[in-house]
Length: 365
Ligand SMILES: [Zn+2]
Image 1: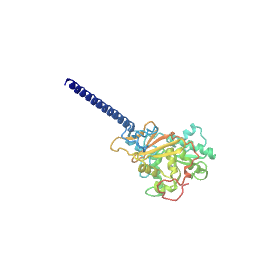
Image 2 (image 1 turned 90 degrees about the vertical axis):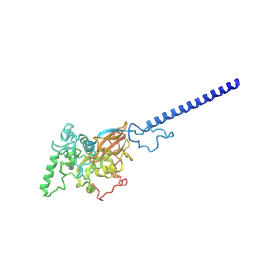
Image 3 (image 1 turned 180 degrees about the horizontal axis):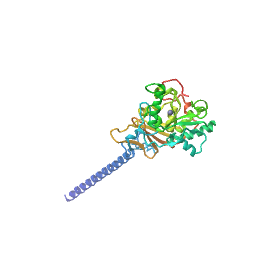
Image 4 (image 1 turned 135 degrees about the horizontal axis):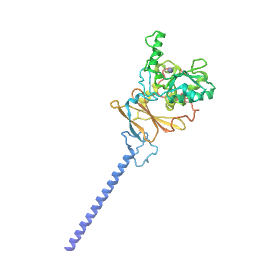
């Protein structure tokens, strides 16, 4: 009996040990699992309410290793009112310019300071934003190198609202009309932004962009510049064909608009409707070294600030579209500051157009 009791007691102890081992094993396995889930979660969801969408594969799968090139987005607080600022703002008859931080340089002063002779400025009052001046100077120097033509004059740049109103009134006085068909009302001219200018020539005082000057329209995208009012977009821009009026938007955007034959109205509309942040992003590769992606973010109209998703550790730029949102440009490869393969001409590519409809069969020169 004593032996039997001893055996029973031994058996109970063994059962208890086995149970304790089982509980310990379950606890350890659970702890490891919890740690692993937490780790995976940290990897997959950065400190942001936004979900990574550039990679379609499920990064949580144990079989798919983490892509080291994957973009992690984080959100930044950005003033909602800045939707009216930036290089991609659309100013036209329906979108008023409200004015912001107009840092300007005198074209003539810069030309004198840099001792340039391959192009000229109008009178001393002609001003544009520095980024636009630098692009114009680079483009017109290259134009001179290619064509030995040095008579381009940057005749008109930034205008104040008052100057625009004076032009408008003068046009009414000249035409006798009640509203002008040629001059934008004060507040609705791109010239007020500092990102637009008009060319003429010092030999004919006329600039039509024809002949040797067509080099400028073919190459201006390489400097981030577009011909703003092409002949076959007048139904959209509501502005007559102006071969002399150029606008700065930045290289990737100028490339995409030129390649796909879009005016700024069409481009900003395309970004808004087809490339919001939550959807696919627009990828633009304009040469072998430069690739970027572009997406649209709605402003938070109920708040002074809008949370904008931006890439962690990559260069990006934010511009308002001047009406209902922000356009984010992320530089995936290169910095978007220059074009390394200028031989590739997007204007030659007539088959690679996107789904927007050309309203006219006219070909802009
Ligand atoms: Zn103009």
